[in-house]
Image: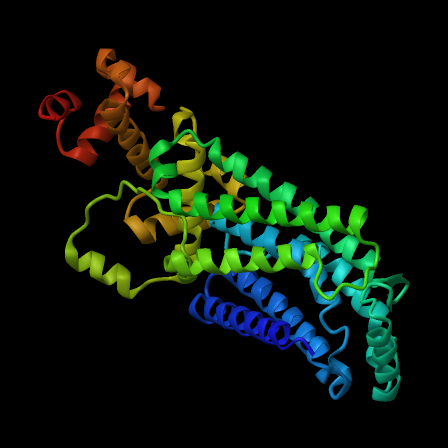
Length: 384
């Protein structure tokens, strides 16, 4: 028995289980981190099975054998759903998301006859596999472990490509303030995607070209897999704020309200409205739809898939204003930001600034500005 390897597997199981449970229990309201917590728990369970195999304890607990096999078809879907929900501030699970779990269900059903078989049958199979020393030649349903492993990592590669597309689209956001305030999330997803991609390529290259079965105790693919998860876990411990369901940070131009009203709003906090506002703010800051003159609540509703009435109610609940006033706050904040950061704006007239920010007339701009800032644009910007 290789005691170092046995201890190493048990350590990986313990760390993965601890991190997975911490992520889920501390972030129960975050769907993104629920997916990521499950991702870690599934990996930890795989390390537990490896611990039982290499320690020989699997003979005493044969019913554990192969229980991790179908779960590994969830690696790709869970990592993708984690990145998608993290970058979109979307805290919903859609009916179509169930399609991601079809490979897991198929493989689970495929292994049902084995799961329901007696301990004696499983022990005979285990002893034959351990004596042969070939972990990958054992059939798991219609295919061997080798081919199921190939399919799982190919699936992970496909999902990784989708994750990169999500990150690239997020990085195309023109609002630099929004991106800067969310740099921690961008760095985290970039590291997660990059390390996953490198791991997948090395594992698949080894699987295809260097080893088709093999009898070595630990392969290059195994070592790469271990290093990948150790790096992920180290990154999480290095930046512990990531364990606390870090969300997209918004620079929201809120209208000032008196302290009594603000206190009442906090006491009346509504989870549904808070979720809507989070998704709305992400859309507004990432896509800057307020730069379009005729933006209305119907247009926003069709893009974020939330009913118009709920959007209006959420804005009223959170800020005490209506939708046009909410949009005008973004427009004025856009003007202020460009005056500070874009030298070209120093040559703009007041009207030029107004039209560039999405106002459809000079009067509309002056009315909105006076209502929000309490003075005219000319006086306000001269004092800056």
